[in-house]
Length: 217
Image (cartoon, rainbow, N blue to C red; front, side, top):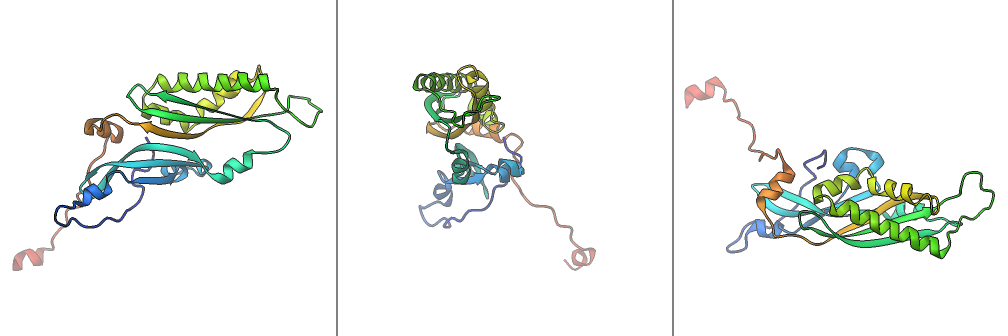
């Protein structure tokens, strides 16, 4: 799903009696910048939440748990003399995940517009909001969670909203500003391994023993 497989390290209390270390790790949520996951600084404004689903050896296998925009990015988009339009909808992916998606968009000046403001009428805002909900529902319900995340990264849904709403009022800076998982299907290790694909546990390298040490042994 992402370029970087190893996100970082986390602390946990050692297994003691009936308290097992892996149980203390399962369910933990890590928030990571997409720039670190994909080694691309242009995506630094997007934060991804990853939840630990399984522990294998010293590795925690995570699953996508949500997404958000950084505060500074969101603040930089909000300006005067334009209309801010937001919409949210609950969707269910083909593999049983229920997500709540939040979209945001802003009106912009038409080509050759002289007037300083570019405010949309209430009826136009309602139409745009309906279009946003329809597009988010269509895009999310036709694919599984992994494919949906791959749509979030290049902002496919935002571009689609801009294109289809151009006839109502020209929009700019359309983003899926937030996505959160409301309900996940029952945990299946095989499904998680499909997401992680070519995952192999790190067992370390074989160390060559010097010939002199072998002779004495």
